[in-house]
Image (tube, rainbow, N blue to C red):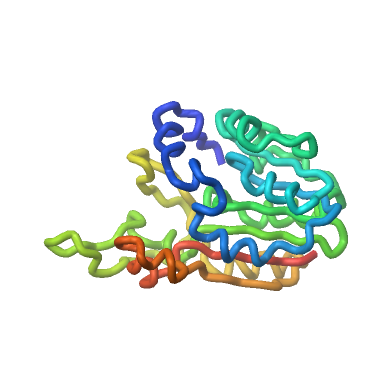
Length: 242
């Protein structure tokens, strides 16, 4: 994962204008489902892989976690996290998922939100997370759904009135690099099949506890255009235990 678009001032400014950047977890469509997966955080140690603005780190502290480490490749993200979600119990570090040391048996919970689809080798991350979790520790992550990452250009096919006709999928069983456009920038992501995502965890020794394909809630369906999000899943939430 060598990309770091978030330290590009133009890209970062556009990202900062998104609702989830301005308003935090309550503006993230997946949060109501993701929050259900969190175990009791009282006196727990937490590692956030790709912490961004630090919203999840601060949430953990508000739920009485003992200590949280949030890492992110982007210096601008970490600066924003320290400004918006500072707490003496949170340590923010500029560091990629690939370079972190993953100390053995150190954390009760590891979380990662919308980062793993930028990683080519999921199994390596799984092994590192398994290593750094304490016995019976919890791994919670949100990854772009394979149906979404296998979408051609991650875009709908539209009719002449620009209404979505269908979501095209191709090369599903060929995992690897995908080029897409996000905030007017070419972004490299990695497509992983459902088998790779789930069986990889099982092969590493994890037990799958929850699996959620994110869909908009009834309130979100009132937002113009949001009803189309019922036509294919965009995100996949997974909770696994060591």
